[in-house]
Amino acid sequence: MGAQKGKDLLLKISDGEGGFTSVAGLRARAVVLNAEAVDVTHSESAGRWRELLEGAGVKRASLSGAGVFRDSSSDAMARELFFEGAIRPWQIVVPDFGVIEAPFQITALEYRGDHLGEVTFDLALESAGEVVFAAA
Image 1 (cartoon, rainbow, N blue to C red):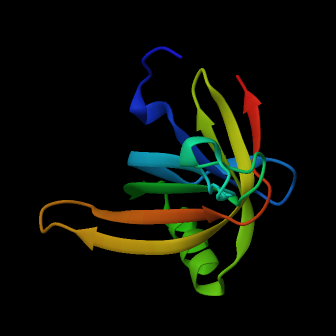
Image 2: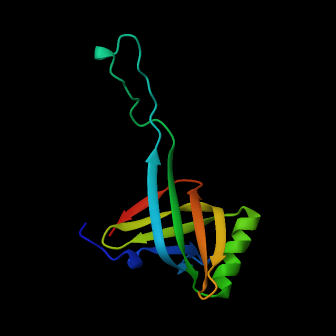
C-alpha cells in the first residue's frame, strides 16, 4: 500500500437497511488490530525460549478518532448509541487497502471546543464480535 491521504479513511455505521452511512468528519484517527498471545512455555522448551500457542488468544479491533460531526443527526446517533451501550455494525474504509467491518461499541465519547472554533469530539470504538476484512 502506497502513501494515502489520512482524510480518506472513512468511518461508517449501518443504516439498518443493508447499507452504511458516513458518521463524522474525522480529522485524526487510528485503527488498531490486536491479538493476545497464549504462552505455553514449559521446562523443556528449547533453550527456555518462549513458546506461543498458534491460533489461540483473543483478537480485537479498536478505533479512535477526533473530528466534527457531519450534522446534528450524526451527533444524536453517536450520543444515543453511547448512552444505550448499543452494539452496531460499523465499517472502517481504508483507501487502497480494504474495508474492516464488525460490530462495535462506542466506549468513549468526548466533546470539546475552543472559544473561536467549532465543537469537536473524540470517539473510541471497541469490537464486539467477528471482524471481517475485505481487501480493496
